[in-house]
Length: 151
Image (cartoon, rainbow, N blue to C red; front, side, top):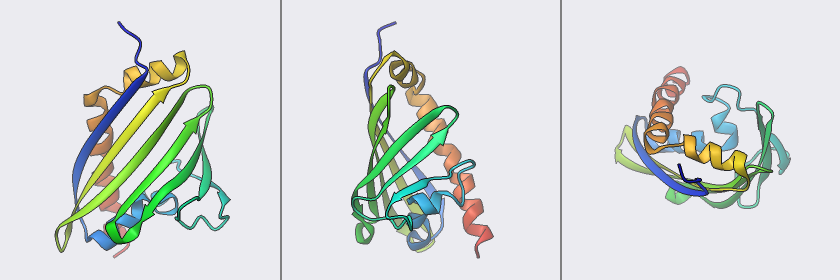
């Protein structure tokens, strides 16, 4: 099997919720409400306010990932992050939300990842198109549950 060094994945999900309630859930603070174990350490600004240039870190298992918001456009319901897991992978995560009805939002989630090592290549090889689709599809019920809990 050839080594996977770069990939691009995109998947869309329909979420039952108004766009102005859904989009904020794709910020670091918003994800704390629906992602188990998501506990960002805010470096700048310390408040965790989503904005261009924000920097934070996350830890999952024995991996630390550094993140920066490189495109923050809440009016267009779009956010883009650069992320690096040292010794493993570098990438971008982009979320674009689009209103499909007053109470339904389509969220397009795009990952672009490049391996920095064999460990990163293994991670990318495991993120098959089907695995990526299943991961993103799994977000929908957690987001919708979060939205229902906050009404």
